[in-house]
Length: 106
Image (cartoon, rainbow, N blue to C red; front, top):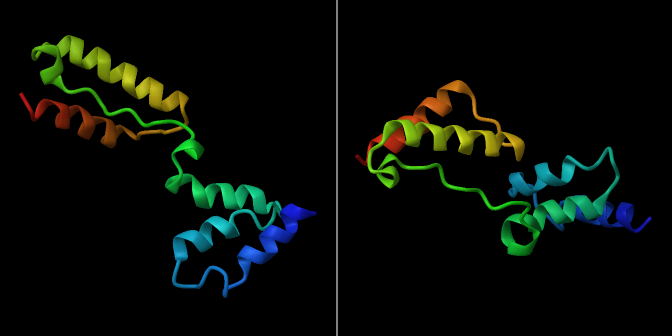
């Protein structure tokens, strides 16, 4: 009951105005579920450190491995696997870009 009331409150345009489209999209995601708590959690997550699900790791850099390409490639594969397990999917083009960006510093 409280979750529905909270959602009803934050969906009003005088609470979150129409110019805040990112926030409005987050709220609208939970209209069918009728859960204001999840909507509020997602609204606050980027701004509150304890609400953030997982810290994103930075991709490896070949300079960290004394320019050993085999070790760098193995660590990049491990990084991509870790990201995949955490629900962050990279398409093939993005994977190539990450690999090349790691090579730029050598």
